[in-house]
Image 1 (cartoon, rainbow, N blue to C red):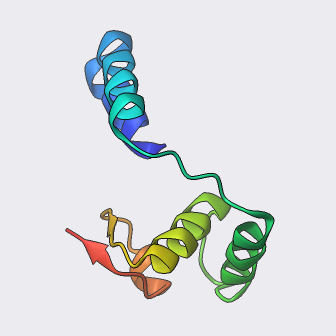
Image 2: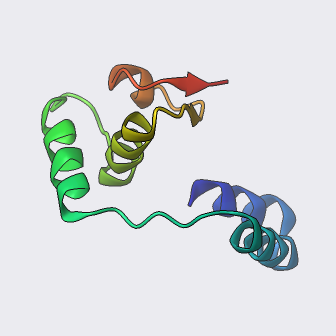
Length: 86
């Protein structure tokens, strides 16, 4: 999770631990299916000229399925034509 990485690097271990505790207490965890991974893999293959990671493609797949925007500044989500909240 990239938000955790940001909190860890900017705030340190204690801030990252607090972030994860609050996140786990107040969110629903979604486990991707094999079909989600397959769709993400196919999405990566659609853009061979881009450095889209499997993680980003999986997030794009799940956000599209749930009709939720992704909170990011990563232009790859624009390339994948995913709804983005900025």
